[in-house]
Length: 518
Image 1 (cartoon, helix red, strand yellow):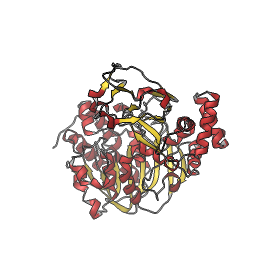
Image 2 (spheres, helix red, strand yellow):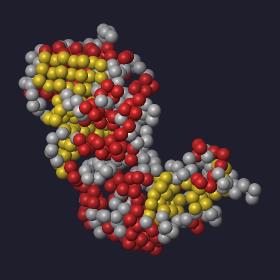
Image 3 (cartoon, one colour):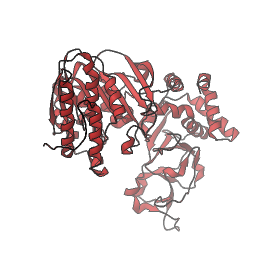
Image 4 (tube, rainbow, N blue to C red):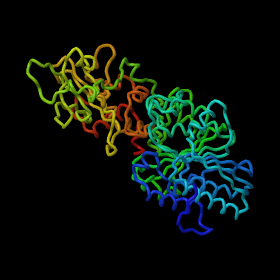
């Protein structure tokens, strides 16, 4: 499909600059809904140039590049602008782009790149495919088709339905509703030569969470991370698309290097002057674990927090304490929900939602539109009710504007006369498996989860606003004695402010080094 686009350039225009101009032009011709449906977020030149710059010198003068989901091929352009410094003879590119409306822009970008490389004495050829990259290359997961020296991509980001053909092809990597970007990464692993490099910009969400467990296990068992760049700002990375997303740039290879450079910038303006530090991979990932959670510290304080947590050998389950997700799914339970208390002919239990829980305070009732505060107690609804005991409520979601990701409160059975309570699905609840949490345990666990040190640790691996029960189950905790003492001290002082919580938690953790680095 050939179309002549009226876009001004000259032969000396850098290919990445021209690709960016084409991307902006294309964006002006399509709707936000079209881009969202395709999972399109075009890479700014600041990011593409940075991604190209982290590529290392090739081992051959004749190289091959794969750019799946290429858009206007800006990443390929930036990569070649870097690699052409190494006296190349030829470059072969395979690029995928399924959006037919974008194709004329991609073709013009690649034609300009071909002319630009020719003038520099490098032979450039390309194959531009409109087929689905995952469907085409899923066979590489079994056959190990190691073809490319460099794979560079800003893949689409969207969740796939469980019956999607691509999900069925890669079902060994799937749990829950997968995001397509993880499939791009997984398939790319087996297309990379043993001495090749994988360079991607992706959401940070794969770093933790049970939905990505199988992916992380596969990916980190086959790829060694060499470099990670983090953006402290959520909004700047793809600001032209008004995207609020925690993203990172990663570079990986199949070599045996065990050191990882972690690079950080606020956003795009300082991306060429990042703060960098080298870590041993074991400081960031426990490769012997099944979960293989990726921790990404950006400050010395965060590093110290990670070391502190590594010194603990306990998880909540070791104390006979478990965490689950609230069983009341509101849209499936509407017939049982009531906005107002009824007379004795209808038996109701309190229903706790996310908005009923703030730090150290479970308040009920709080009447909000479409958030019924009562649930009917019947034989049918009983399976979704919870025995009225002492718990810790923990929000499953935080707002993007919340200062803390972890927001927890103790709940005591004496708050209500009811024998059962309802806990809505957007709340997690922590409980003792055999018996009941002591009040000092409930207060201590809540305070520890609300503390700065725990919130900091959680943020080093959690790149979204979700707080899954699985993540809390895997988190190390101090001893049950420390948990109880924190609870006792707070109850005695009757001060549940954030300042008091941090003071008492740090005191009991005896981590003066943490305070010294604030």
